[in-house]
Image (cartoon, rainbow, N blue to C red):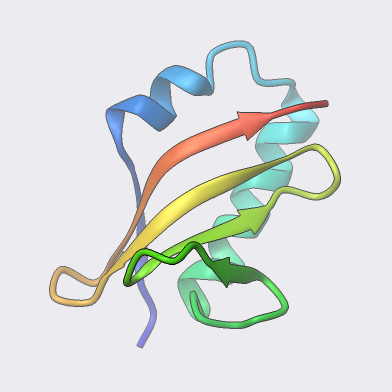
Length: 82
């Protein structure tokens, strides 16, 4: 099953001022996560069911939940350190 990305309002607010290269990395990551959100190479569990974390290169990470009913990857947080 392939999922669609959905950025929640908090993640959208955190994108303000995101550099172009970071946005490109985020889009690439979301495309890969939407293909297989449970791939251990891309993401790791957070301890909360269906909630995972994935690195955006060496520059930050996203926290997302897999909404299997709606077919969505719901991104809650975007932390950009670079």
